[in-house]
Figure (cartoon, rainbow, N blue to C red):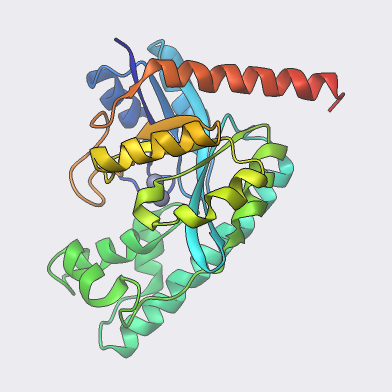
Length: 282
Ligand SMILES: [Zn+2]
Ligand SMILES: [Zn+2]
């Protein structure tokens, strides 16, 4: 039996592994295919693709876009993205700059609460263009301003806590469109985590291609529920661990094993999409 893990993060967003370390771990977990899905970034894809090619592992270049629909945050995974697509790169750059401003705002809020953290320390630790809350949490722990990552989120960074800052997001429909124009397939990430079932029909109307049924934080019951939804709307089925290395907890890569039949359907959908695009002369 062959398996895949299609939801992984590296140092190019808030994961702790380099693309090469990630591929090595994937190999040790016996995975036959991985997808890299850093937050609002495709920067690690080139290196991950090369590392996969060297060990004959299948690779899908991707990203996880933070979006919203009716004031609900929703993450949209893009698979098979053309990582050189100029429109995609421009849009990503804009959302990376939103992320950087948000870090400054969170740090300012922490300063007002008496925690002497500097935004520069967060950026130095993040060392990537897509910094996020886990980097703020890690910087707080590193500078001994707080005891643990959990405490950083519980006391300050979680939604509703005093240093939480809302994030300007692209609309979910826009993100589906952006993924499509970059040659990719759009998949709704961990629907069970955001409790966003009511927006699925609108996303399907916008051209959503798939849904992440298997995820670290989905129970078996949840996975079954989303498999039914996938069947109802004829959506592709994906799954992944959402591994962030040591950033959030222990490395999760390989703990969610997506059966290969779903990977094959994903590759087939990409192929038929490409054929349609070629026939339409695009
Ligand atoms: Zn997510
Ligand atoms: Zn993720």
